[in-house]
Length: 131
Image (cartoon, rainbow, N blue to C red; front, side, top):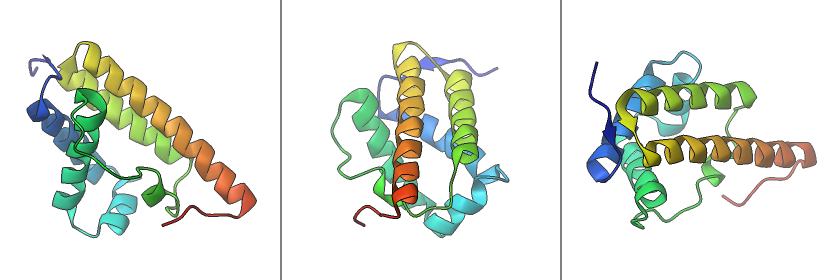
């Protein structure tokens, strides 16, 4: 078993993101959705995710953007968020320990709930956020 470490710097963020998206790429439910959106440009997506989680967990502001907007038009529902969270939590728990690991899971759970609520609102009211 790999030694679990604390999330303290960008190298741990990159390790988390790379391991997580390795699972996403192999997942029968999530892989097609991500691939359809990313269109093979994983390096660009991973770089964005490094910066996002660096900003969120390390408070080093390198991400500027709106994380929800790209998801607004995707064909995703509660089952997709559940699977995404399952893979994310498993990755964090396999590789990391400590307060930042707990925070990463907490933030991912809150993000999934918020995204689902917003998607439901937009769909129920037949409106869409700015792109």
